[in-house]
Image 1: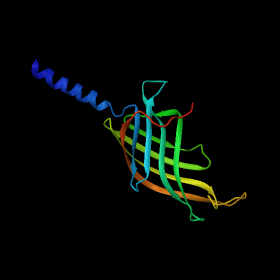
Image 2 (image 1 turned 30 degrees about the vertical axis):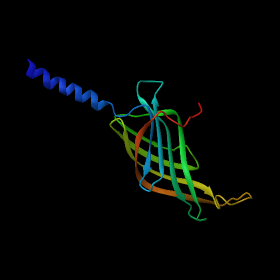
Image 3 (image 1 turned 120 degrees about the vertical axis):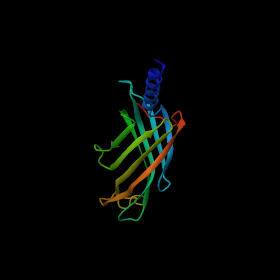
Image 4 (image 1 turned 90 degrees about the vertical axis):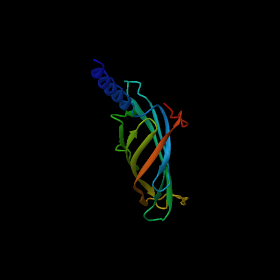
Amino acid sequence: MQRFLLPVLATLLATSMGAQAQQIGEYTGLTDDGSTVTIDVAQDPGNSNLEVTLVAFGLSLPCSKSGETLHDIGIGINNGADIIGGKFSFNTANFFDIDLVTSMTFKGTTTVKGKVGANLAAFNPALTHDKLTKNVQVCVSPVQNFTATFTGAPKLAIAP
């Protein structure tokens, strides 16, 4: 009987430990080019899943025409998006000026790894005009890898 119970208990323990793929709080890290990454995870109020409520990337986005470089994209995800099987993906399909695509996998309870790419539609020039302009340009950050680690309670607040 003991020979039978030990493998069963070990399997159950391994299965229950493997299911915990992330935890509530903030994950921070860097992309391949050294840009900052912030991801907030919370409890989904509508079910028992955890969800991502914020993705923020300190990306550099060089502009195609003016030569200027724009920085930082942060998206608060109002209703959140559930993390399923330790995986999460998001794109800004309903935005007209931001094209952000990211996917990530939570590894254990302290690490998340993924990819991110972003494009912005910006005026030309983006930063230095003082009169209305009709000229536009694209500012692009290439797709790159990132790694973030759990740092504790979220530090950025999202307005409801």
